[in-house]
Image (cartoon, rainbow, N blue to C red; front, side, top):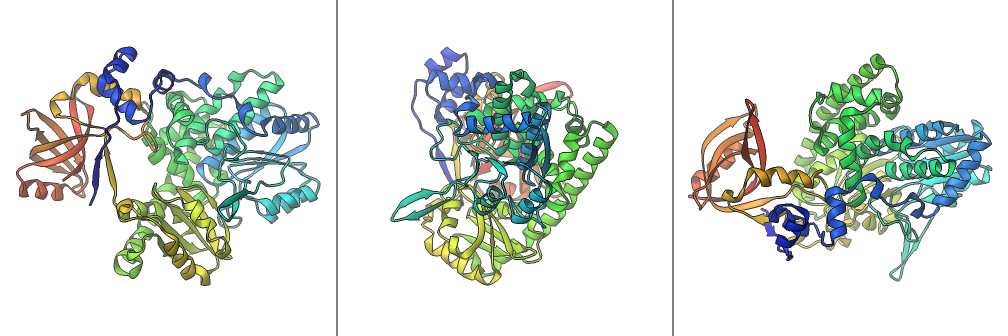
Amino acid sequence: MEKWVVTMKKGNFKEVAEKFGIDPVIARILRNRDLTGDGEISDYLYGTMDSLPSPWLLKDMDRAVSVLTEKIREKKKIRIIGDYDIDGVMSTYVLLKGLTLLGADADHYIPDRIADGYGLHMPIMEKAVKDGIDTILTCDNGIAAHDEIRYAKEQGMTVVVTDHHEVPYVEEHGEKTYLLPEADAVVDPKRPDCSYPSKNICGAVVAYKLIRALYERSGTAAGETDAFIEFIGIATVGDVMDLTGESRTIVKEALKRIPYTENTGLKALVDVCGLRDKKITAYHIGFVLGPCINASGRIDTAERALGLFLSEDSETAYKTAGDLENLNQSRKAMTEKGAGAAYEMVEKSEIGNDRVLVIYLPECHESLAGIIAGRIRERYNKPAFVLTDGEQSVKGSGRSIEAYSMYDELVKCADLLLQFGGHPMAAGLSIAKEKIPLFRKRLNDNCTLTEEELIPRVTIDVPMPFGYVTESLTRQLSLLEPFGKGNPRPLFAQKEVHAGDFRVYGQNRNVLRMNVRGADGHTCAAVYFGDADALIRYSEQRQTISVTYYPEINTYRGVDSIRLVVQNYC
């Protein structure tokens, strides 16, 4: 069951259309995205990297730059500590390359997902002491590593944290007290005392901002950082940031640059994934390139992915890119097996009655917990945690729905957890096995989600008869790209639709080509990706159906035509 909702925000669409030279339908979609002022609309349609906020607006940026500038000048040993996911790999790459170009004595360490777990841990810090490291520089982690950073300071090390995760807090009597680590500088836009206007940036963008500021301070040309844009764009999509504001502008620019990248490793990965000479979209980052990078940290070591982008030898790069693609294929097979077990547990046990799903899959590879949690969230539209056996404790990942702040709910369970962190929409944790039942009970006892909030919503931008779909409008929709979280592809709807001339394709009968005719008599070619037989049966049982759709330009044998992609039906 779905709830279809039409966005009905008001505005002078004709005036906006004339001012910006766009179709009134595009103007209405911009209003639906809460873009109202001329400046906001102009930035959305035509914004560039030059229009992004200054890195100096980030709290502690001046302190971080001063510390690192002195360490670089004194040739002190700097160790970058990243993370094993796509954002962590890209953050590490940006800092390592950026600092090296400034002449820093810098190396790196990416924690092993299985052996180390997420973020800073005591063995990592103890190794840094043994290796004679002077300065620890974190990226995509560190904001919650209070004990580890305190230890580093006690050992005489300097610590600079760059992160984008939520700042830990304790809550008493409705008052939140935020707990910052005792580092020499903490650069995180989520700090409550940080005035940086873009809170929704990934760890790699925070790292990029630091390098930009360091280059400004040293007098290095700002253009030297342009080579990092494709990497921070990939990280933004891969870490599922909202594609709004600064993040959208970065991804838009990155997509232009990826096909022409000068990075040997990225070139090889694009080629191995079959994307050479293709228009690369956010979809390709999220579902083709990104999973190959993530597969390295999931079932091997993230060092392999980082090594790909550091490689300057084409033959080595192609071999590594091929290895990552093969790892991703293995990851897919393992994911399908784990997801199948999770679905069975939800549908054949009392767990399925919970509003917050806590699923314990002891034999599942712990690196796949987040992916499987995402699958469960998508299928049942409920917050979901998947827990697996780690080496020393049970580890888990969660994925949430918009109405449920996963991080805030974990704070209420802090006494049950060994460690946790994350965002409102995603989180990670570790827990003792015997506390899993209590964890599940606490989450559901605290849950305030209503039945309505658990119903999937389909948000329609414009109810629009097929006859209004023109080639000009369809091409103008590209002005709204890149599409993704926070900036969905515009969705239109039409009632009283006759569907016919069905042709089913695909090994799993999941591609349906057909013709659709609206109440005005206008007929269009259409395609549906899903259970083709179910749509055919539904259509044949009724005289007409309602559909949501978006138009696209379909090119066949050099001839362009409009095709509608049906998304939902009822």
